[in-house]
Image (cartoon, rainbow, N blue to C red; front, side, top):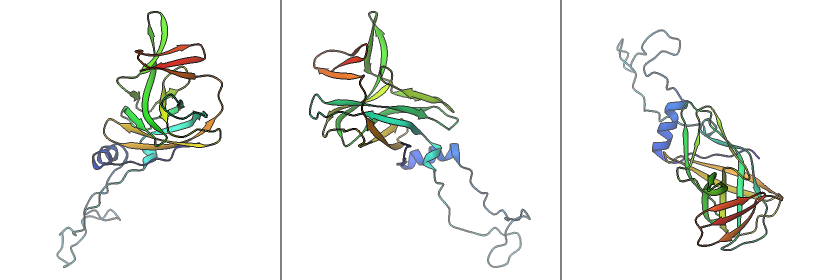
Length: 207
């Protein structure tokens, strides 16, 4: 399912607008014939008009394409699932995703795959995700993904999971993804361990 996005926060709006929008010059004649006269008819005087704040098309900021979540039936402290897809950045500046949230989970983390002592380990990405300018970042089982933990409700196949991504500058992008049955990425919860370890199709999350 394609993303639906919302951009919040005046600082985020201003920053994204610099990348995506141009403002029409004040006092320019639409026909290109020089300055507009003032309302009192004085030649050469620029007309006054209220300032117009720039706006941002959320589609010009960040999207989660082909997004999906693994369907799970459990809820509670040990229940978890993952969100996957392709983060797409159409701008000419890298976008730094630093966090995420959803009403369906008590805890959401950005995870990555690393090598630790010769073993592949899944753990929280301390620096978040960098989506390169004009590029994409793949979220997939066994690789980078968004982990939803402490689920407050089941995630049946065919249901919708709404997740909000948060960027370094405060921009928030909300995506709705469909849950589907997936045999891999079988997570179990093992408190007290330092990492989220992957062994084949089975992953053990540790805190």
